[in-house]
Image 1: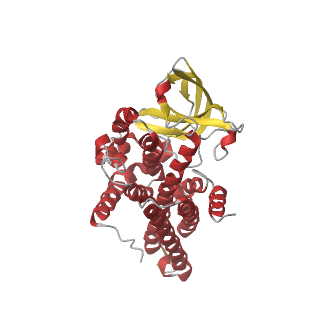
Image 2: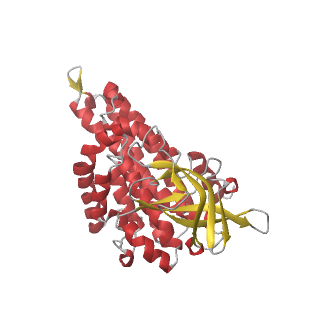
Image 3: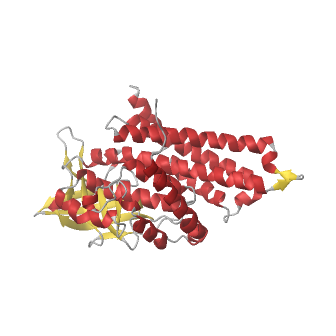
Amino acid sequence: MLDTRLTDEQQQLRKTVEEFAREVVAPVSYQHDRDKTFPYEVVRGMAEMGLFGLPFPEEYGGMGGDYFALCLAIEELARVDQSVAITLEAGCSLGAMPVHRFGTEAQKQEWLPVLTSGEALGAFGLTEAGAGSDAGGTRTTAVLADGQWTINGSKAFITNSGTDITRLVTVTAVTGELPDGRKEISSILVPVPTAGFTAEPPYDKVGWHASDTHPLSFDDVRVPEENLLGQRGRGYANFLSILDEGRIAIAALSVGAAQGCVDESVKYAKERSAFGRPIAQNQAIAFKIARMEARVMTARAAYYDAAAKMLAGLPFKKEAAVAKLVAGEAAMDNARDATQVHGGYGFMNEYPVSRHYRDSKILEVGEGTTEVQLMLIARQLGM
């Protein structure tokens, strides 16, 4: 029988992050969202708590926890602010995890302590205007000569890539041609700042206004040969394995967002009266919120299952795709229903559900669209 109960240590972590989210994150979320500013003070608080080091070994400055611990923290943050949650998710699973999984000992010693401490942020440069899930569309190149890689090209939609504390961007680039004619794609570490590297002006996004997202350009960016991350020609495959793990974390974020919509809807429905009684006493409202809670519980079970298989060393690609699919849709559906429960107030930006409504759509797009998840699930079924 699957045991989904949290240990005492996991419960304490969840409670600690929940209190931090409520007392530190929530009071400044509206302002950062409105002003489209990066929440440096919140990030410092998360760093002091050790959240950026949760899934990393103590020898590299981490907390010695595991990936599920990171997911629990992300879920609690996302209940009140998805921008803050994605900053942690991207900083750990996309910024530092590639170095941890594929780096040399020298690379780990150089980069992991500053990334796991939250002193610096790393970014993950895979997507391009014409490439992401389609590796063949990668146009960024890296040419090796005289002991240096020279990188030229661009990346799109890169999280944590232009903050004042961004210190590393890992990029995929075409480094040659394979015997079968396909592109050889490798991953390379680019310190920030490096001459020729530019984080272009930030995107004007529908949501996640307090999350840092930029297009990147590389104009004859030169880094040492030893900045190759992992085996040459394995860059895209390695990044896909990082995305498999990342989908579990995004599912956790989605569950947090969906739960936040339930929290706000229950509170509002009990406080708001119409026709002489709280609207929570109307079956139409109560059933809508009950269905929202059912989505949360289903999605949480899916990401717990995927995380358990990953930590047990079992295949988890299908489970991660299912979790990301179910949780992303739950977040979007709950955001829509929560806005409806709130009526006109749900359309006002100072109410958290309006932010969830704008923020949640990306959860059906980022780190693999809904259609990509369906494709992955179908492939795992042998179709």
